[in-house]
Length: 226
Ligand SMILES: Nc1ncnc2c1ncn2[C@@H]1O[C@H](COP(=O)(O)OP(=O)(O)O)[C@@H](O)[C@H]1O
Ligand SMILES: [Mg+2]
Image 1 (spheres, protein in one colour):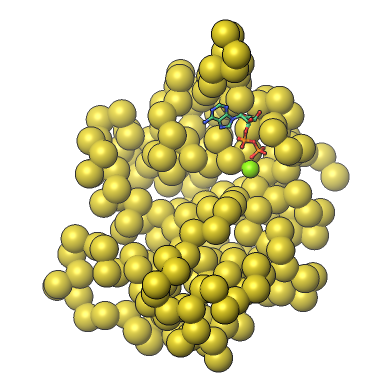
Image 2 (cartoon, rainbow, N blue to C red):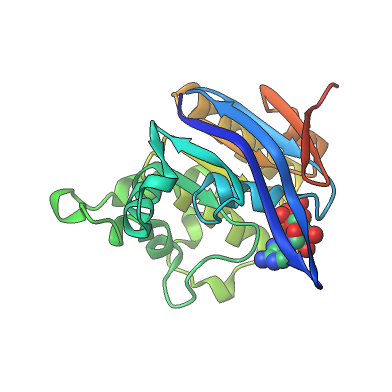
């Protein structure tokens, strides 16, 4: 088992009360699983992904990643685990403006605690950039790129460390259909090689790539039937 989400709930304050953005969600991902979650805006998708990555603490429930309970790790240990083993594609912009495209893809290596022992994975970064169609722009800066180009660089970066778990929050939201298929095929290939994929998407095309599909509505998750 790569990731286990057990009875997760997340309450946020709203006015003088609180409401549940995520309500009693449980989900397990094995190696090779490709999970897609759809749902309307505000239904708790990004919150759920943040909890799965250990970035947001749940109000109730627990998360177990590769046999380790996030609760039992301090912030540094969780960061190290994420750096090595979780590729996260954020919903919003996430590239560093003063780094080139190639440097942004290399970022997980630059910040990793074990990097001194390992050669810089420049060839891998270049391969990933090629796979997302961004190698010709490797020396550009984020300000010079379109939204779809920025997204593809963020996807390449998430895959750099060959993570056991890839979490992607609407990764194809600003891509055309051909690029969308390319990215989802790349994700499928990662799943076939033994990673677990957890992807949130509005779009029916990428949604079909999931071998497990769910819908989140008002924080409650149910299986999706075609
Ligand atoms: N930090 C926060 N504080 C309070 N409310 C939040 C916070 N983050 C998200 N929310 C609320 O939780 C709900 C779910 O948000 P989110 O997980 O971003 O939904 P989605 O990704 O499905 O659009 C929304 O109503 C949003 O306004
Ligand atoms: Mg969201």
